[in-house]
Structures are given as structure tokens and as C-alpha cells.
Length: 212
Image: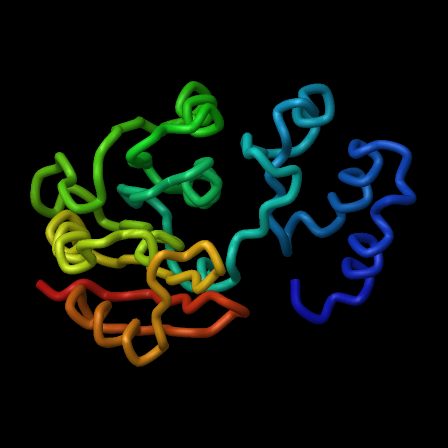
């Protein structure tokens, strides 16, 4: 939450809390502003937080740009799902179901699939085993920098998605391919119309309306 000085104070001084549970009790007052993803080790406290989901991280903020998309009754494919954090978020916002795909399925994503309307499919972003327009929404978050055949991956996103794609690049040191904002726009324009784009640190974030 940008500009929330009280939340900033809590996070900066988080070491003073005697337990992670005590920290989360303090953070719970911001439940309408932030999405908290709780570590599975916090099982006792996790039950007290409404619609919390498992992640590798005890805190995993959802990008604010996600708030501009209506996920109610959406059929979502999270391509390159990682720990399943984004899938957990869209389910909490009313998505009908979510399919998590990755070339390697992590244990956290497997745990999510056991407790929610989420399925797991091991697949490459360049060859997705889904019918045309199988999903209303797709997520391709911080993945494009690590895909060699970007054209094929973007073609697959456009093929399987009927409404919106949430897509970002992440120009971290570990990224195999760094993209300028011009290169990013040129690529994602092949999927559809960019209706929102922003820069957030090393990330370029976008919402794309798919072309028919």
C-alpha cells in the first residue's frame, strides 16, 4: 500500500514482534488494503485469517494493477504460476476456477490445488494443452524474460484467452532477456490492446484486452 505510513512503520519495525502471528494480528487491520499470503508453517494462525492461501513467503503483495480487473466468475489460467500466489488472489476475488501451469509444479501450488478450485497442469508456455478460448483471463507474470520463444508464448496466450491477459516483465539480474518498455509494448501488442501499463521498479506491468 503506497503512502500508508502506519503500514510502513509496522513492516519496517517487524523484528520487534515476538512472533509472526503477532505481526499478522497487527497487519489484519489492513485486510481491505492488502492481500496477505500466509506461510503453511503458521497453520494455527492461518485459520484465523479469512481466505488466506499458501505461499513460500509469509508476505507476498499482489500488484495494485490487479485491482483494475474484475475476476468474478472468471475462468483463469496462470501460466508460469510459480508458488500459486496470483492464482490464490484471483480465487479470493471470485474467480470460478483457476488452472495453474508451469514447467515445474512447486509444492506450494500443489497445496493450493488441494484446498481450492484450482487444477495443476505441467506444461510449457509455448505449447499449452488447452482448447481455443478456454479461459476468460490469463496471467503471465514475470515469465516473458525467461522464455526464449516469446512469439510462441504470446500466441498461446492469445489463443486460449477470451477477455484479458495480465502480463509483466521483470528485468532482474537473473532475467535471461531484459526488455525496454518499447520492446515490451511491441511484443504485447500482438496479444491485444494495452488498456493499462505501468512501471514498478524493475517490473513493467500491463493489462491487455484480447483481440477477437
